[in-house]
Image (cartoon, rainbow, N blue to C red):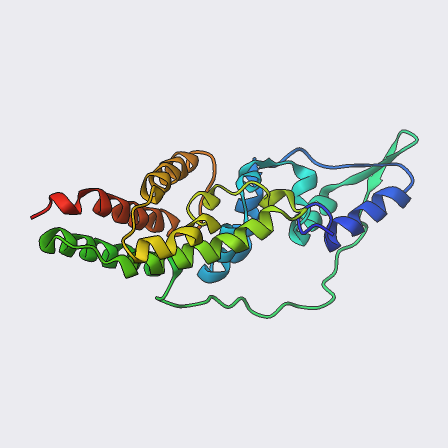
Length: 244
């Protein structure tokens, strides 16, 4: 099973194509869209579901999806089947003779909430900015705040690593792993105890690579704010001793 390339919809399509006499002719290709765009059509009104999906999906999800790939969504398979025809022995006939609704869906419900992932990440950036500013004013560092950030990013990184090691192609290369990764966990103790560490240089390099990666991969809402928060903490550890 693969939720994009081998799911309950594509299996039904494959069975029909294998057992039908003739060849299915689909209409001309629709506009180019990515797998992520298609999933967004279903999750746009559910910010936390959309965030979770975008956090799990990697670089491959932003490639253009051909017609076969688009058909992982039932609505897109229905769209294509309604316009498709069967070609057999030089003759053409419609693939679908009749369309009918068996079960009517419930009315669409939009998830209304002001506590969105984007808002939460923005609050994180604001709090981090205030703490960083206070550090410069007081000439000190809040190392336990950094340790808490590293703990959250490290645990999240374990989840991403598990997905990247799975057999799902759309999760195998995820550039968000540059800032959410288990490496953070190895430095929590040193950061909390203000011990000398090369972590800050390593983290800064990964964050810069993360920002460059946004050219090719669309990140989950608010992840750029998270990266900016981490970058601020790195900057603070470089410069706080020079602040008065």
